[in-house]
Image (cartoon, rainbow over all chains, first blue to last red; front, side, top):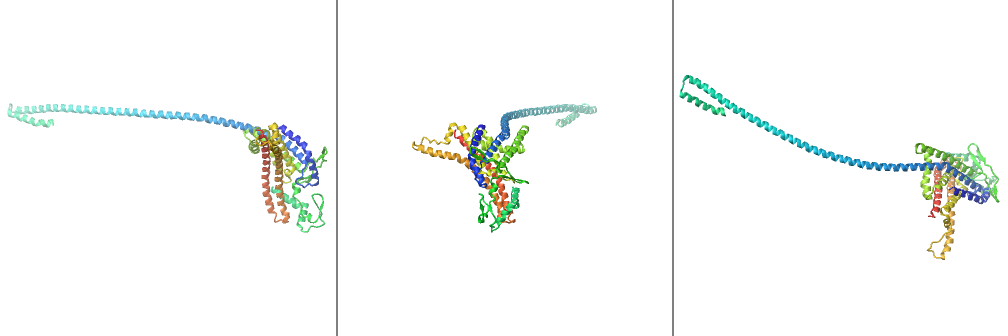
Length: 197
Length: 324
């Protein structure tokens, strides 16, 4: 670029005189002609522009461009890093999701198992309770039966005792009275069904 | 701009010369005793003395500088430098001063902005404020205008095109502030800028294409063309190519010059309406219109700087592309 500009300067400096003659003449005679060419002005334009360009290129555009390029690079790096991070995060997320799903499935299975086990235990307990109840009932019934039988026997004995005592009383009055004995016997016979029932 | 137009109106209204001219215009019967001087120094009398040109002196170059509170300052006149029988008048004119002011403004605006930009970037990672605005312009021109048009490895042309843009922009805008003058409304300035662009274009063509650069001047007919037609085509098309080479910078120079001049002619013509009507009651209308067209001029100042830069880059890109 520098050589390009240098070439420009040299060739233009060589060319300026050609424009100048016409310009100088034009400037003197017709100052208000819009299209008159002024060689001096052209020369100054060239000098000012070229100097300005070198100054700006060195002190303004170079630092700005360098800073901007550095920032662009930093941005690109940051974008690449962000993309990488995002991909990693996505992979991690997928993995986590899978893990959580597995955990869910496990938990579900555990719950099902626990529920069935619980059910079984409950059924067993209920079964056992029923059984015990039946046993208790049977025992109670048997005891009641036994007690009743004993009571009947005792009652019979008591009745016999009473009868014997009654009889002895009668006998004391009329010993060997057959008729009396029969009377007692028949009395006892009437009592029996009442006790048995 | 408002200030400028009002100042202009006041200046024209208050300065004795303007008043004199206005009175002379108002008078339907020009006095024979009034002697007017024409552009070529001859004396004009009678009907010829009627219209007075206040527009042209305002937009053309001169050896005097208008300064606030000081008035007109005559610039030094140096004896023309003679190089081999050719005289160049190197004395500074108003437009030379304006170009210098534009260049100094460019440096004063861009270099501190660049410094601040670098400082902000180092401190905070990103520029802020004015430096950020300058960066936005520089980056836009670099990434959207210069690099895509210049083509691959166009980084070397970025400083040239950016300088072109900011220099033309400041020169354009200087014409819109009071006491300023549009140096880019002078054909000499735009011609020189166009010539610089032309030389940059041609040299970049030579550098990228080597010997192939000759093909941008001399047309080589394709194989399908019958043999007897080849020399004819060669001559005609070579002339066309050569003309095309010079048309581009010529159009650049004329475009910038005409756009800058036209805006100021319109502005001055609008202000002149006040004197044409010769009444204070008319003044608000032309002033409002002048303010509007001043606003338009700001836009045109940016636009023309942009177009000059864009087209320069397009021409560089075109000639570099030819080799690939």
